[in-house]
Length: 125
Ligand code: HEC
Image 1: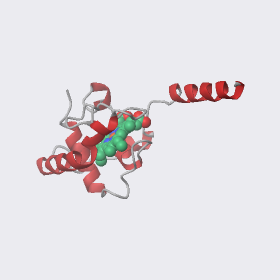
Image 2: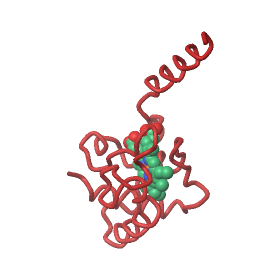
Image 3: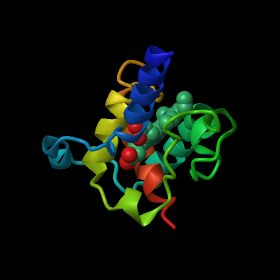
Image 4: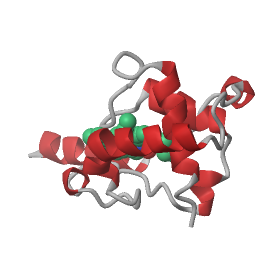
């Protein structure tokens, strides 16, 4: 009985103590080689629709069908708070992942990850 309570408490603390996801400061120095390029934005849009929308939602609002049951929830990618970070920080997060989001280091080339960054920039509210 007592241990069940302790376990429940630890799960509760674990849930609320998950920090906001921050990229390391070095990430801010990375420059997007395809920033604002139409071809890159088109490419990123395609990749987003096939690999990311399932969780982040078709329009990036964090409302994809597979995201509803996740903890934490997929981030809303159109907010000012999201867009306040650097391209490098966004690239770093797509590269590294953080559970329940996978790392895309092995599955997407650097170029494709930058294309995604360029596309995400167009989603700003
Ligand atoms: C399995 C569901 C899932 C898929 C698929 C997924 N994500 Fe995520 N994503 C998440 C979750 C959950 C978070 C929040 C993680 C956290 O805050 O710890 C997140 C966070 C992010 C963030 C960081 C937001 C921030 O600033 O904190 C970016 C950028 C991102 N996702 C982009 C993508 C891109 C691009 C793809 C496709 C290549 C993708 N995600 C695919 C679930 C997913």
